[in-house]
Amino acid sequence: MRLYLISGWLLVAIGVLHNSIGVVMGWPILAAIVAEGGWNTIEPGGHMHFDRSAILWFLVTGCFWMLLGYLMQSWLRVVRAPLPKVIGWGLFSAGVVVAFLLPVSGAWLFIALGLMVALGAPEPAVIEAQTCESPA
Image 1: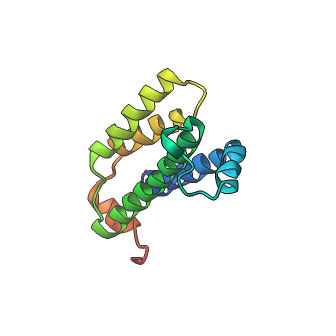
Image 2: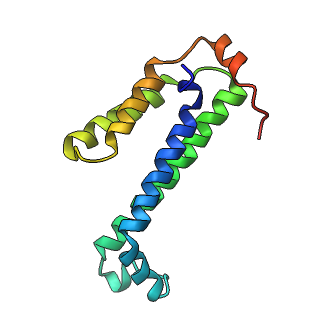
């Protein structure tokens, strides 16, 4: 139950880990983008650089996970009610699909987090009592 109360921070941590891996593994691609000035270096002249597009969307996805995690944590702190179960089932479903297609990946984290959010919600009174953080 205590993990449920920090489930948003766990998603933020997954996003940070995801983007850290992306920067390290995609460093040569990112360096090439910067070396060419950044502007219009993903699809210059109608020619798509798929490696550059992939690293761009890889990093943007991690940023959105961090934003969703912060939103989840804010919900628990401000609304003081369980997270909508659809968030948990969505994380779980995405994790299952990705784990099937790419078993050696971080998708398993989404399966665990999704189940925790979908099935592990404590009673609202417990959330009220244990989320005594000050609003940001």
